[in-house]
Image (cartoon, rainbow, N blue to C red; front, side):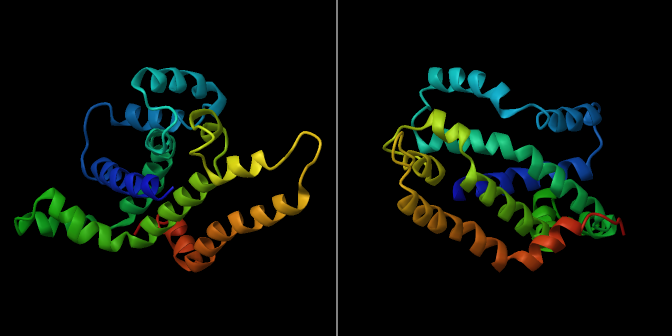
Amino acid sequence: ALSTTVVVLLFGSAAAYAVTQWKFPGMGGVLGLTLFTQLLPQTATLVPIYLLWSQLGLTGSLGGIGIVYSLLFLPVAVWMLIGFFRSLPYELTEAALVDGAGRLRILWSIVLPLAWPALISVGAYTLIVCWSEFLFALVFLRSDATTVTVRLAFLIGEHDPNIGPLMAAATIATLCPLIIFFALQRHFVAGLTGGAVKN
């Protein structure tokens, strides 16, 4: 979950910045295709991705499932960040270009510091969704290297549900996203609504 969050924030912020700063042929189609990937149910993409990952030897490893999570949640991060980046005044980047700053320098020194509420909200969302994801973790990982949600499912026996240990483990597993959400709640709401109104 942590590695996926870092990758999604890194590539998502770069992609959102490129979309909001440059106009290139087919940009609308690229954005539409990015949004279309979120309309597909996970069960429709599970088998093709698993077959590809099997040929690449990426099944059964946390690195392989991290790449899958990054591909699944990157489009959402891009769309969330595009709304916020479009609300930033273009005069800031224009003045930096006049002063001789490069695009990467503008992104790192100007855009990202201003966009930290959106980055926090996207990061918290990605971390919580990765932490609670079940289907891909169940299929792609082995029993000796799996996630907390799959471990919780293993506690449910066929004849003995193990209610006591299951509830205790579920409570402990829920603490992580709860702590993250309550700690970043103010920034989370600010980041989600930051791009709602264009300045």
